[in-house]
Structures are given as structure tokens and as C-alpha cells.
Image 1 (cartoon, rainbow, N blue to C red):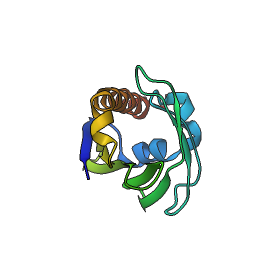
Image 2: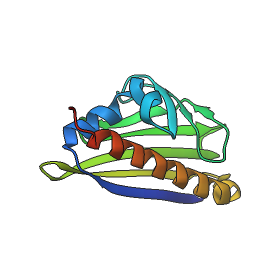
Image 3: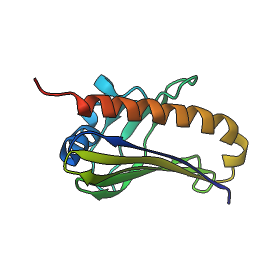
Length: 148
């Protein structure tokens, strides 16, 4: 089965708690997130959520992935499937780690598995990576704002 990964990371000049608060609050995604423009649901393993993803150059797409892992304050993952399992499965991963007192490393990646991955990869890789970069920058900008 074909597998591909998109991987990004960046340092955010803000405490991990502030970054986690922004990243885990789905109700606010529409106000700051240019890639995942809508998210609704409970951040709890086994729960299905609804997300609308708008990758650059693509139409918005609705997905209903299942939360598969939550480590409070550090990481969450969801798994989406198109059609049947093994055809096109996508695991989306958000991971935070404290670098220093007020610096957080944000790792944002996605694993693609399934029969359709080789056929869709050329277009997917570019648009998804561009979307990740836009979201990462927006999260950094949001979290680095001072509350004055």
C-alpha cells in the first residue's frame, strides 16, 4: 500500500499552554485558520469531528475524521478515510513540545495511505503543504500576539 507524508515544523514564541489553547479550540478556527476554515466536535478519542479544509488552489472540502489520539497539552491526531479503508486514508497530526519557557515547537504533519495516493499525490502534495504553511504562520501570528 502506498504511503506518503507531508511534514512541517516551526518555532512559536509563546508558551505551550497558549499554543495548545488556540490549536485545541475548534470553535475559533474560522477566525484565524486559513487552511482548516471550520472545525466542530469534541477533542476526545473515538469521537468524529467535522472539518472543512481549504487548500490553496482547491475548493473547500468537508471531512468527518475520527479523533484517534489526544495527549492533553501536547498532541492530537485524527484519521479520515475516503470511500473504504485502504483506498485513501489520511492521518493528520498536531504535536507541541516546549523548547524553552516561552518557545513552543509545533510539528504539523499528515500521513497518506491507500491505493489512490499515487494517483493524487502530485496535486495533493503541493496544495496540502501550501495549506499547512499558511495555517502554521497564522497559528504563530495568533499565539505571538500580546494581550495588551
